[in-house]
Image: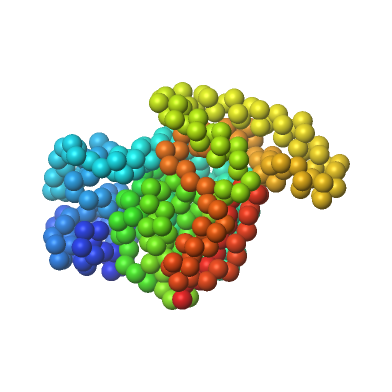
Length: 370
């Protein structure tokens, strides 16, 4: 992070202003902050900066969410990391599972990089634009926030379009990989923590994006409120969420099965994902792709799951397996009805620009804050 970013941030305990403790700061050659501590000027709470990433967890949760490496850095910076509390709420424990499961996926099972994001499949720019419904030129000169930034796919594509500032918030430790994806000329601010405890001040962004993630958050209305709150007036909000419509297979079969599947280790769930992936891959190659080549579009569109299967046909088997794995392992998955998306927007006093049932299985929505 850079010293100029500090004014954008706030204490997650009291929303107070933050200041850098100079004698605990290590700077890089470009004057960016590699290691350091931010102190709230109101309540005195401390927040570590680790390898350029500002870490925003409440003090009692540091021992629960931090890796061993992060804990060692905190100790070296003078921040005490105690023991995991015994009276954690169910919501906190569920959020911890979300962090662990997605960290496993992005760091171990599918550690994608630049070469993957440049491919013409789910990971590429074409589908990113289709899910977010924001055109490349709209990012130029804008302050953009990406919520639940995962392995950096969204940040990578946005960075190619000259944003004025790019901010990424992610719950898991995979956020440390994102800086390696982004060109040094991009003004980048990385934040690790639970977005429900908003680390950003209101009105600091022009565009606020949450792509394929809002449905994995414990408090979805609360998270959407955060996504909107950071926007300046007339700013753009973009979300892509699972749709309840056209998703009977997921809502009535896969989700109930998770009660059993989630008792198994992630490595076992990863192996289980091979079976549905193999079935889907075979159906795509033997039926959906040939049908797309010989049947009229009107008839193809009447075939169940046609749009999403053709979308999946653009990538390799490994991508289908990853998609099946994340559908299975996700501790929190919610499927939004169209009316629910509209109600989220209404409650935050926004006006919808676009609401599209992308591939028949997700809602892509952009709206304007007023």
